[in-house]
Image (cartoon, rainbow, N blue to C red; front, side, top):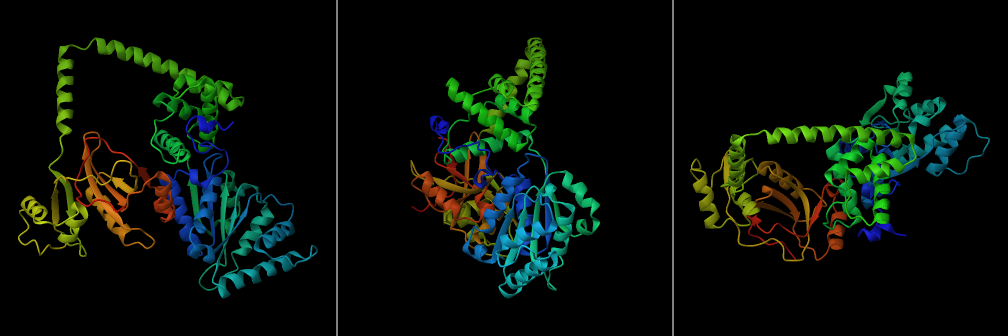
Length: 492
């Protein structure tokens, strides 16, 4: 039975396979991938990623390989080879395996260790020097590498020109590999990057779960399956380790199907934990029960304290509510921008408001009395940009847009917009400030096109650079009270 069809999923959201499309790139994942890619392109030699069981090493490994083949240029320049199980019985067996992975097939079984090394060295020189290709050996489960094979990896690092290493080595391993490395100082000293993956905090885990649900639904906007307390139960049971989170969420969803549930909370998740057979989850089930008792006691005490509050507390609460309502008013200014050497007032207004009409220019000049001449804006001048609502909506009913970046800081998001606009392989972008009572002032960088459906938007996302594509969002509707400030409608 395809259970995901019942909950409107297009694919399995919590598969235990390392599917790169489900990798929710947190700051540490993006940071790790970018540093590994840079190290490979600079041909720095050996890099090591260490993390506890279930922190996402294998998924990150597959995502890295995917990134290296994301464009035809990369596929031509970078040659990757993945070794999943490095537990070899001898150094010769290890060398034979590496030789076969590289495509060296004309060696004899009786060839010595020295001959195999020479064959591999010749291959690396041909690829790296003559063909100018980057050869990458990626090893998963690095803690299984025998000591004699680690020595061979160290020798591989001696295959180099005056400018770069001929073989790039990336090892993904569990924590014990750090101890193994430190015992081999002559290899440890050569490690270019040693990166530690950490488990997720609660906020990151919640975002990861919601991201997986979104991917499984082709980014359609639907309510979450888990209440806050349901997510809290998942976090307490898993400690934020992605593999455990995926395993538990899979079991919860299966149980939801059986019981006909659409949303689950604390008690439902705890009942799923109690049925899981592993000792770890049994112990965590008791821990959840203890935490629940503490929470109930805390809530009871809080209820008593609330009952003891006097009339002054109610008056204070009313004042706070009144302040909140006042804060929901649209602010007079979008924010401020610092003018740079290559930034003109005309193009800045055109990017933010969609035009530099006399109405817009006069409003901006009035908001900045320190500007003596609008045609001469000095580098370092700070310009305040007033909130001037537009009379258009950027999308029609039923259209879909792709958000490349969004945030609440005008200068921060606008600087990213300018940076992205000059990047190669980027489509035309638009900068859209907006305001509504729920979110306040926000700024979006979007692909300058309205898409007719989610699939068309996903295809556009797939053409973006991988690091940027990982952060995109697909949106098809707005809050009813949303006000936009850019007057230019997106292309169709």
